Image (cartoon, chains in turn yellow, blue):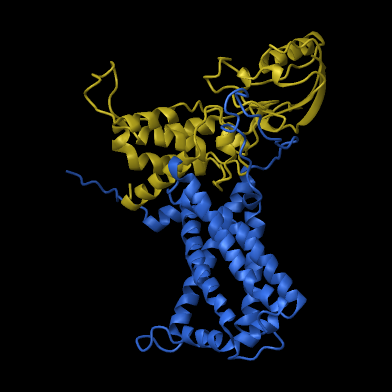
Length: 247
Length: 251
């Protein structure tokens, strides 16, 4: 396959960036999107140019490191992570636009790499339980109802990639925050901090400069892990409940 | 023993709400529902015009006597006005502040606008993962709200204070309504605003339900159906009046 790539190049956080055009040839449809970028980078390095910086780690769709907006969609045209997107989703001769996540809370570090430590700070503000953990507990010690276990697991799938923020027209982190809040608040182990967790995490989310939710649903559509939109509604319910109790 | 001098000052419920994006949306949802309930009553009351001038004028006069003798003449009307103005102010201020924040949170647009996702996996149940794009109603909430705000100002000047209704006479609501809808601009402004209202309610009602925590997987169709039904009923109910004046059903 022969492709034209228009890639966002930005030297560092302070420099202005722009889209640069590159031609790549000899791309196999079985390559992953990141392998295609590796091919481009090899050519750039051989030509003495600066390779395109992009985040990646496990390359098997579970770590949440990869983060590209491909042709206007977070993680590209398939509903999966960029590393699990394959070039067979594109056609020979295509022009592909590759941009970083866009949100003021996710400043661009270089090229396609953005700083997502705002997510870490949201987790630090309440995405944990205070019960002592250690060896695996006796399974019958704390009974978890099946529906609660299912809800918690569905929300625990979030890998924190930030596609929800990138897809949201308001740069809102509500889907990410709600996935974490609903995951822990559904379980008896998370019950002691049920109220403070939602208040602190929403407070931190606001402090990071993420936008508010207008229920456009773009986040849940972009989410590679299928975190459902109603999880935002559940977090709203938890928030008002906690605010009424005054922590 | 030294006493703990730390004062445990808990933020008030209202303070917690207004201080966060989630709480501000809650205030918008509640004020929106107050306005929505009023609009349902207002629309049903408007339909009295189809029973003739005597019925309509008597209904307008009755509105001023609700609650008597406990309430004084027109007091109910003024209480309703104060509640509605409060709802409009809360709704508009929260919307303005949140919009400012939202625009600041996404300062750069994508060079390539989103085309929509492929259904995936393509072989199985393609409808399940079809990209649900934000609807027209969703994307026009902000400017639709501004249009409705301007309309409310015109509507009050036209049919409450009668300032911009040259042929109007106080105490003759039926004739005043007919006078408004006998002009092309009166009809245009009103019908455009009612279409904007329908769009605003279509997304607003469903969104308010999500904000108030009523969203659940098994209830989405019901909530969307209610939102669409309310939007259609209110728009058609309100537009019925100018259309009837234009077609001569009401004169």
